Length: 245
Image (tube, rainbow, N blue to C red; front, side, top):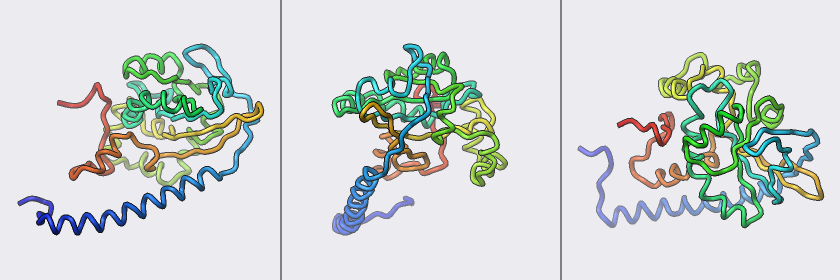
């Protein structure tokens, strides 16, 4: 027997109409959230940050590449990861390159950060076939100042993180093996979007959002939610070059 309901076309149309009402409410709420997000106050970035990039050292202001807005995704790839970045973050990274042309024409520069040294980021970028600028925050205060990484002490002060480290579910153990790091090290990286703006020669922090969140997910997850057998949470992701047979 199937594990899903079988209905007539008329029954399906009735259920679809009910769902359409919820989707409309969800879309309306999304518009309100967007409006509130744009009303957030800006915070002046007063500390000087210098990063390792593929083109040498750059300041935060230089990462804007002449535009007024900087949108960055922090990929979970810490200094202790021996086998590569988080597979879930890598899924998202696979989809970022194609958006850059559209963002650039709307005054937005898109980059990615990670805390691993730049030589490891460059090698991983080549492995994944990415074309976005990949910037290392290694050895800087930046990821800690903006909540993109935790110190070991901070990680154990968060009950949810401590619980996952002390008693990890099977999927998380698999994840730890995929990145080649102990969970107490791997879980200190924060998969996040962080946004900055430039105005009158100053740089401002405007927004940050961290997973788990609907705004920090690969686009294919958006598409999978429209299918009847989409996997739910707690399922391990795979890098595109490592899918099992």
